[in-house]
Length: 292
Image 1 (tube, rainbow, N blue to C red):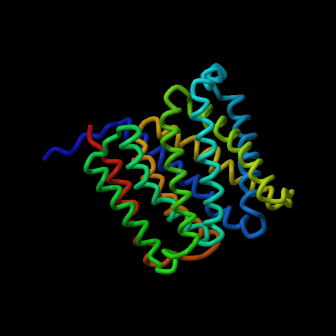
Image 2: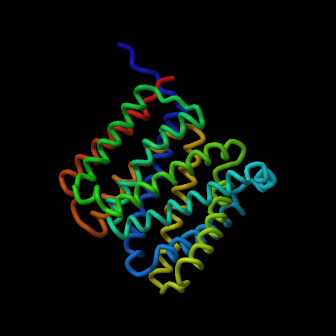
Image 3: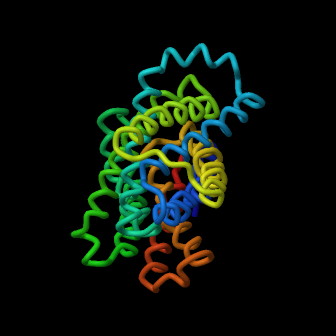
């Protein structure tokens, strides 16, 4: 019996995207705590303002300065990317306020379905049967984790689904824009644009405040984990694999979010949550096993 051959680039891209979820999942847990004392608009602005500073330092030492002149070729992609990401981030915080970190991370991961559809029509990426099967497992796992009748009728669920839509749109735009720009450069430019949008939204819809020391500390550490390390790794993986598969792998933020909540805040996840996590991981493994 011959085992299927693995595409090394695809497998590497899948592993990088999976590693990015471990960092990205801190988004849900830490913002869950911050949302108790700060408005979503204030969290959003300081989160990406601090991330922009850190990414600027990374770009200064490790970025390719010559790529800056290429940003003009993708300026509209970057503006759309920053706008979609800012909206997704803001709306997801509202989802966190209603559902909590782990459950809201579940609802936004239904962007997998949206991502496959958008990638099919906008990027002409046709998924193989085994990847569709893997996506079905991921969606099934998310549904099991989210198996609470009250959630399906809540404002939080609606907010999570809308955030998922904007995340999917941002992935499509990132796929287009990342062809001629490195992950470090695009992430720095994206975050800087998000900061501008987030500042405008904060001025219009909220009262600007200065966070206390503990809040500010979390607003520095958390963006480093998610917006800087996690997102840069995700865009690196996105250059190696198709956007729908990358989005499906990113669904494992749900698994990490539940694990982090067990370690730091809530306690042992329910049996249903554990079963859902297992099904989700199976789906990710299936997606990773793409033949040459």
